[in-house]
Amino acid sequence: MSAALRLARPEDLDRLMGLVAAFHAEAGIQQDPDQRRDALVPLLEGIPHGCIYLIGPSRAPLGYIILTFGWSVEFGGMDGFVDEIYIRPAIRGRGIATEVLLDLPKALAGAGLTALHLEVDRTNEAAQKLYLRTGFKPRDRYMLMSKKL
Image (cartoon, rainbow, N blue to C red; front, side, top):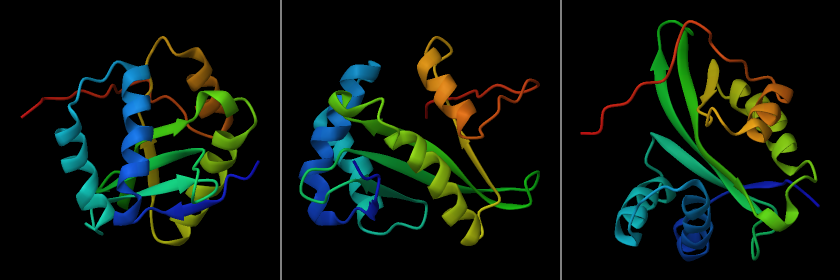
């Protein structure tokens, strides 16, 4: 099984919509299809604030990873946030997410990213182990806080 990454394009929207809907259902994220489409299309069309990579074969992706970009004075420049990462349930446990989370940050660092962040459910021990194994560390003094606008 290959974790080869391919930058998603507008023609991948329908395929991606199914994957994202599956992830959202699994994670309990409430979002109607129109909201989901409106959030994905700019990323597929090349908005500079983020991108989506499909994982595995183009015709039948194994999953996806969505990155968004920002700027951090603390980290000394452009940083990124893993907004979502999803691997189809039937193929989990084969090292695909591990490969993505080890290789993609190296490529991003080569492109000038200074840090990569992510958020994980406090009760999802499997995901926490994956993220720790791939070099992500909790920031004990900080917690992510959000305000919906």
